[in-house]
Image 1 (cartoon, rainbow, N blue to C red):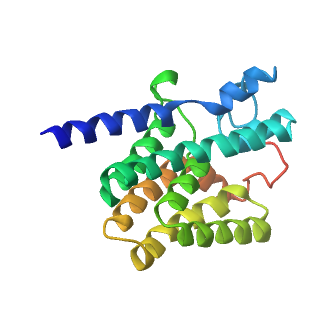
Image 2: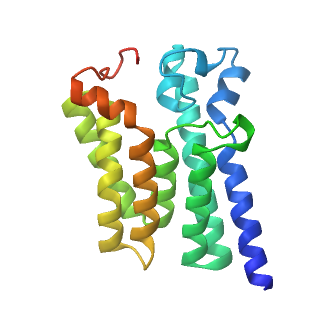
Length: 199
């Protein structure tokens, strides 16, 4: 019972960390306004970059990745592989559905990479390489993110410990759901290229 209570408490803490809207925090601290009022209206690094500040975009990217990475590392240290997976999924859910923003969060790409690197770093490298390759080929950031997230569960199954596939598959499905509008625009040939303004 004590261990179950500890796991529940840890999952809640990981969720709350994931819920911190760093994109909003960074833009407000730097006096750049609210990223929800520009571009795609998203609080993630890609939309924060549309404020015109590369520093803000980079800071958001790093912080959103760290809030996925840290719960994985702490969970692994405290509870082993299962704890690492629980921490990663909980933090990812926090980013997508943050309690501080009435459960309206980001699309989870940076946090996804943080989780993957924490769980199985070679899979993180592979997913990152796929994102870069697809994004460079298509000049569409969301296409790179979708492809990378779809490939991660398979790589996790091949290279990671038990349970990795299921954790990454859940995260991948949620990323695809949150990118529903992007997918429709990609299919219609209307998805903005990198550097263009999102609809």
